Image 1: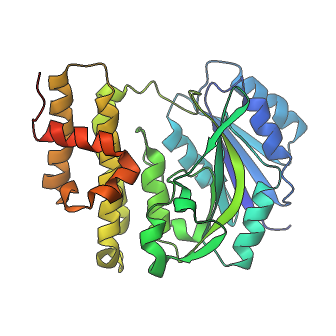
Image 2 (image 1 turned 90 degrees about the vertical axis):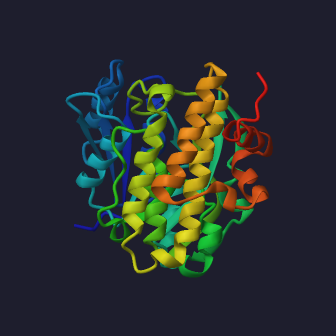
Length: 328
């Protein structure tokens, strides 16, 4: 029996509207020797019925399972990893779809270039119209093989999405998604990146992400109540990297990733429909935790560099909240 080249893990939660598009695009992949693992996270719509319908037609290629209760996307993807056998592992959300050649191109180019991670571009879709692409994806550097030890500064700007990538199983070791938290991609992708040697960024746009969809495995997270879960992500990233021989060499860039991640959460708070005093309290708590727990001060980083990730207007407003310069 030939070995599985790529395991494709599809977490599903209330995706019945788009699930057939997703499954059809994955089942039409031109790469041979793939396995597809679709896990329903206790959907309340017809998603699992659709999975059973497809599984009856594609028994040899499609495995399905259902969680006994809603567990969240992190747990669901981790379950898929534990079930997978492929040399590479990829993820597709249950409401998105992909180019039929995506995994063949990624796998063949990954093997040819001995890459640990292969990444393709993302196109955003809304109402069946293409909105834009992921312009932050590698800062417009496409079709290039990066040596992690040399190019980590540039790789620290890699999009954190796990769905437009394949990861060689060997580099994951104990790296898994943070469970019961939002932003689970961040720690997983950057931890895998840190453990890699070679990363291939392809000059394609093969992953189609449905914007404004509720997406996969949301556990009715309340951004207001769960904002401090962002530190679960930071803790996981630090845990996965701090004991590496290369940690001190990469610490500046790891801290930069953490700073940008926390500032992005602070910029989200700016748009909340809450009292200004509440915004000040939350943003200052985010900043103080960054300093006291992790020893990182975002003001040590170049403002222009940070503004590429956060936005200059948002960054100025965050500064004013932290420095209490707001006139009510």
